[in-house]
Image: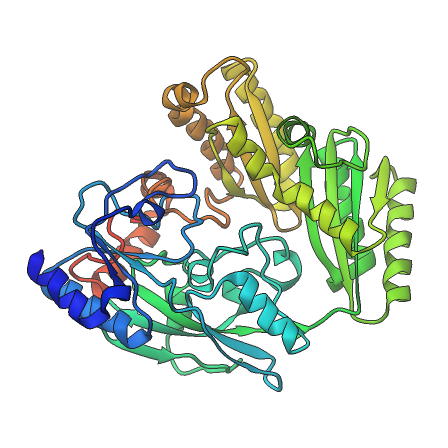
Length: 467
């Protein structure tokens, strides 16, 4: 590998190549489940340099692991422990290339932090609606490579729906200049959608053009306590009826999730009383503040009258609204503090969610009494983070080692019976690769492998992930 690293160093310079020393920031995933050992870390500063890296990797048959903010949850962006894989970090490619106000779009490089994309849109008086708890450190390229969802999918869609065009470097080191701002382009296969969600296995996204939206005149946020998950689903139906497209967020948190939050992060205030389920809902109104408040208050009054809601707290200012969202977004941190847990990022038809949860809660309790189910997520688009923690007194690592396979089988079998998905927004990576192989339609898997073979015949792009 000496010749490869020497050629790479000549192309990238000292700032663009890290060899030896402490590379742990690039070698360990956020959950610390997949520590690895990199051959080196390439840090190109331009699309041309990315192309140079991939051409050299192809010439020397070096596998490459593309990496954005390294905030993924499925082990898709860190090297294995062989010491033979090159980490390709896009961290230096963080420029917003431009905002086109008339076209209501923005172009930015793959290493641009999601929060910086949002800020660039806001500076132009516009909104980029993709929003995640990790938005300060996750990157646009990673968001697209995993087709990230977040908290406003209900209104604006996930990363795929927000993307107009891509710039991609292929496994052969060729640059596809597909950075279009067009909303209509019916000229053959949609290559953009091929690369979105491919987790770096088909090409390296280096830049993207994204849709923007007008800033809402007002946003109103509330927490609503519900006696059951059925009541929360009924509230969702009422919110859609009353607010229509103004409904931008509809999150649900179980009693166990908020109890964990109170135990691990007691400094966070919970303004509603204890309830079986707590809903966080938000509307964004384009008309006026007065209209937004009238719609919101009418919705909550109707929900209380119909028995969907027991208690509610409306944020009176932006600070309170952010505090409500901070509660929801802090649940993963509370889980991390409590120890390793079995994560399930699942999608189901909204109509199937309450029956699924009732069945699975009972099945898991029967399987292992005392087990803790930490259930929360994006009820509005059918995405639950149905996570399972060890019973009190059981070491988390030992719990995972002994029970993860069996619990995954219980959960994923139930999801599959109801026409759901084993990955809603986190991707497949290494964590769910074998599950995908066992559960994906064989015809679909065959098509996916054929595409992989055509675009990456040497199998050098993120090997062992997704497929």
